Image 1: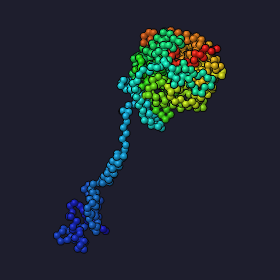
Image 2 (image 1 turned 90 degrees about the horizontal axis):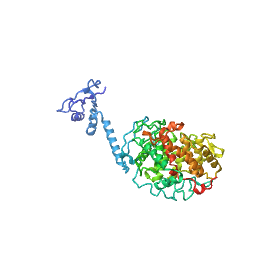
Image 3 (image 1 turned 120 degrees about the horizontal axis):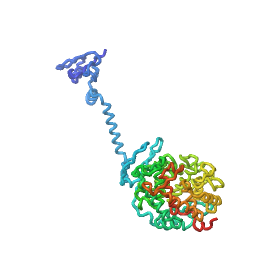
Image 4 (image 1 turned 180 degrees about the vertical axis):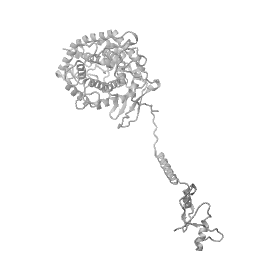
Length: 541
C-alpha cells in the first residue's frame, strides 16, 4: 500500500530533509541534524473542519516549489477558479467599454410615457410640456421596436398672413374635368388653396358671399367657447363631457369611449375658424389638443396608428393633424401627419377599396368618407397621398352606388340619405365634374330631401355637397340649415353655445359631437373653398 507524507502544519519541515534523504539512499531517514519524518498510511476521511482541504504528496515526489507550491497550497482558498473567471470577465468588459461608441443626442431628454389599459383620472397639465409632441412606440407583442420621436413646436408668425391671397403653387380642392388626371388638380386661379378662406380677411368676405350672417358667425363663436370650456386639463376632449370644468352641469353626455376621436372632432371647428396652435384666441386649446393627439399616437412600421380601437378615430385625428400642418407649415407636425396618412393607406381594403373599423376589413361608406377627407387634407398640406389609393376609393363607390351613382348605400347598393350625401361628396373629391349626370341627380335628391332637423351626420356632408354645388339650390338649402342651427343653439347656463339633437349618432356622441358638427356646418362658407368656380355655377341646370 503506498505511503504518504503528512504535510500538516504541525509536522516537521519537509523541504531540505527530503532532499537529504534521497541523497543518502535510505528511505524514511533524515540527514544528520534533521528530525525524522513520520511515515503513515493513507489517512481516514477528515473528521473535523480542520482536516478539510489539506493535500497530500507522494513520498517519492519532490515537494512543489515556487508558483506550483503556491497553487497547491492555495487549496486552502477554494475559490481559485472564481478568481480566474472574475479576472476574465473584467478584461472582457474593459474591452467592450473601449469599443463602445458614445451617442450624444441634441434632442434633449426623452419624456416618460405611462402605458395603461384602464381609464385614468385627468392629469395635472403643465404648460412647459406643450412644446414637444411625442409618438409612442408600438409596444404590442411581436411589434417592431421603434425609437421615440420628439417633434419640436417652433414659434413662428401668424398663420393668417397671406392666406387670403390665392397661392398658385398650392393645388386647389376641386375639379372641372370629367376625367381628371390628378384627383385634386387646380380648377381655376380664383379658387386658390382649399384652406385659404380661413384667414381673417378672407373669412369675412366669404361669409357674406356664401350666405352666412352675423347671427350665424356669433353662433360659431359661442360654440367654440363651449368647446374650450369642456377641454380636460391634459388637452383632451371626451364624448362624456361632464368631467373637468363642466362638473356635470351640461346634460346629454355621449357614450363613445374614444378620446382620440373626441379630441380630433373638437379641434376641427377651431381649425375651421382659422385658429391654430401658433396664433389666435384659441392658440392654447389647439396646442394642447394637438399635443394630446401626439401622445395617443403609436409609431408602427405601417405608419402612425391613431385608431384607439376604430378607424373613425384614425380618420378624424389625421384630418386635424393635416389641417393644422397645412395652415401653419409647422415642421413639428409634418412627420406625425404624414405617418397618419401612411397608416390610412395601409389600412385600406385593397380588394374593395374602402375602409371600416379595423385595417383591411371590407369597407362601409361612413368610415370611408372620413378616410378620404383625411387624404384630401393631407394633399392640401402637400403631403404624400398615393394615387392608387384614390383609384381604389372609386372602385368602392362603384360597389355601393345606386342609380349610376346618384345615391349610395352603406355596405351595399341599398340607398340611404346619409350615405348618399357622403358618397356624393366623395365623388366630388375623386373627379366628378359638375356636368356629371349622376351628380346632378344626386344634388337634386338632396335638394328635395332638404336639411334634417336632428341628423347632424347627414347635414354635415350634405351641406358641403350643396355648398360646393352652389347656385339657387345652395341658397335654398343654406337658409333652412343656417336658420335652424341658429335657432336651436342653447343659450342658458353652462350649456350655452352648445347643441344637442336626439338621434342614433347624437345619442352616442352626445352634446360634444352635436356641437362640433353644428359649428362646422356653420363654418361651411369659409372652411373649404368651393370645388367649382363661379363661372361653372352660372351654367347650372
